[in-house]
Image 1 (cartoon, rainbow, N blue to C red):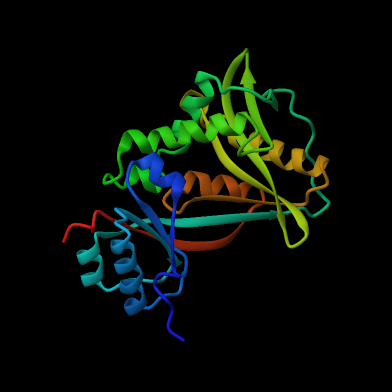
Image 2: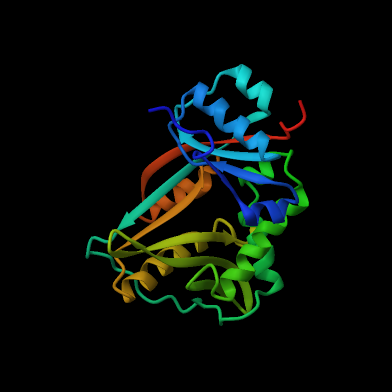
Length: 251
């Protein structure tokens, strides 16, 4: 049965408020080109200015569709996963601890901005860049306040924050799993092993709560992050193409 294009579309309230225009998401990853056009036309009727579409990594829409609807590949969304083996040796790290629940510091906001440097919003210049940067500042602020994360781990040396990672606990298939939201190391501290220490601190934090699994999402172009996750024992789980259709309301 053909997909109803209206049923394959969801308006995104938060994104719409943040970017200052109607934003929608196509919810069916497996649309053919005809159904994709139907969903984009449904978005046009709702006056969407931006539409996201998460599709299989190999999916390539017809170039004429991309031209007509302002389509552009935003990202190869890359997911890594970790499953505890029981053989982990993760001693406590005295330089990494939890941020107290409350506002984020200026250093943490700067690290959050760094974490978003290669995001699909920053790399697609059609998005308002000030809003794309602010998105990550909001993310760390809400994480520190416990709204988007259950913990924010912070690495410090001589009182200076050198890195951070946010952890959220999710319920999946009747089991708890961890999800790393943001992770970043200050430019001045890169190449000194802080990233791997933060990853191990995340794993230790989860194991202390009897959580045996964790996921983290990055961009395939972020090769440094991909290599870090692999060194920490994470395995590649999934790659998706994220398409942006921007500004196609005006014919």
